[in-house]
Amino acid sequence: MKKRILLLAGGQSGEHEVSLMSARSVLSALPRDQFDVTPVVISKQGRWLPPTETQRALESGEAPTGGDLVLHRAASAEGYDAVFPLLHGPMGEDGTVQGLLTLAGIPFVGSGVLGSAVSMDKIMTKQVLASAGIPQVAWALAVRREWQQDPHAVRERAAQLGYPLFVKPANLGSSVGISKVARAEDLDGALNLAFSLDRRVILEAMTAHKPREVEVGILGNDAPIASPVGELRFDADFYDYETKYTEGRASMHIPAPLPPEVAEQIRTLALRAFRALDCAGLARVDFFYVEETGELLLNEVNTMPGFTTTSMYPKLFEAAGLNYSALVTRLVELALEDR
Ligand code: ATP
Ligand code: MG
Ligand code: MG
Ligand code: MG
Image 1 (cartoon, rainbow, N blue to C red):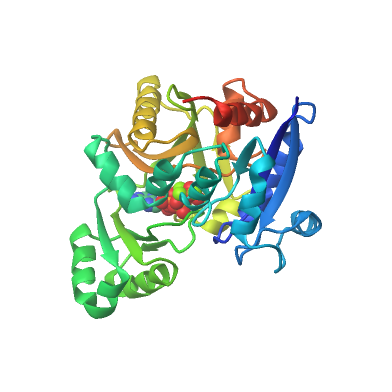
Image 2 (cartoon, rainbow, N blue to C red):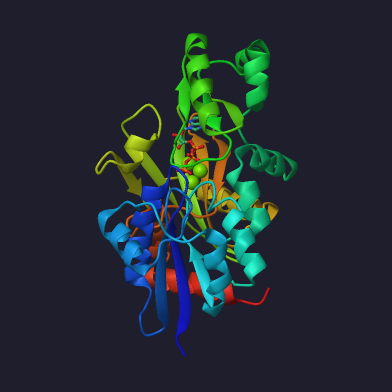
């Protein structure tokens, strides 16, 4: 019998449009002889759009207002065998939707509440990975209220990390709200931007040399496997939103030209991080590799990485012999697996 799949896309985060792109690819790749797929686009206001409005949003690339309230839809979602929450960022990749689905008793693709919430939050991720002995850049936390009441304390913390440094909202993706701050004079602007998007902000040191950016895909539940390692190259100061989503600005190299022992170390560390964070289903684990020193630093774990047919995660598994359609089928199987 065909499995009934609810494919959630869009969502309330700054990565709404990116999610719609991913969803279009997944929608056309899930084999129709095995799956009966119902796409539902969640608008930026958090409303779950009915089928006709969903169709319109998928075609036009943006969601209008209107639709049902989230809880109402979840209650009537009991008829689905599994949900594919193809949502990036807050209110989708961060455990909120996963909590709703857990309450509704519907299996879903990807990490549960804990793995999603911890991996979305760059500060919690750093703390968990530090306790697992995984190497990372030096970092510091700042909270909005503190920035408003005692900005000097936050500026001090930044000075201790040294410039240039990165300022990031704790819970976001696609580089939204991230600044590379070259000089102390530019710190306030970067903090104001990050705090306009999140209550908590992370300050991160940079490595002495510009690092190479390498990524690995993880697939599985409690017996996960790692893909070959890929590398991103781009002609920009850092991998910002524009560079990520403008055609031709970045290139992917799979497998990454690395000494075999470095690639193996990346895969081992990524699997360790996946387990430490209690991830499930899939994750893309991103690293900095400092060629000059041989240093390998884990940057972040994305529990619902970009998922168009040309995105890094599916490309990594394609290189491992699993094509896009087989990959999404496998993800649904993993969602339905007894654990
Ligand atoms: P994604 O879209 O992959 O979820 P994100 O929004 O979570 O990304 P990061 O991956 O943390 O953001 O940072 C975006 C980019 O900024 C990185 O790919 C890298 O180019 C640069 N960057 C971030 N932190 C650092 C750092 N500490 N040192 C050097 N470069 C960094
Ligand atoms: Mg991220
Ligand atoms: Mg992300
Ligand atoms: Mg990233």
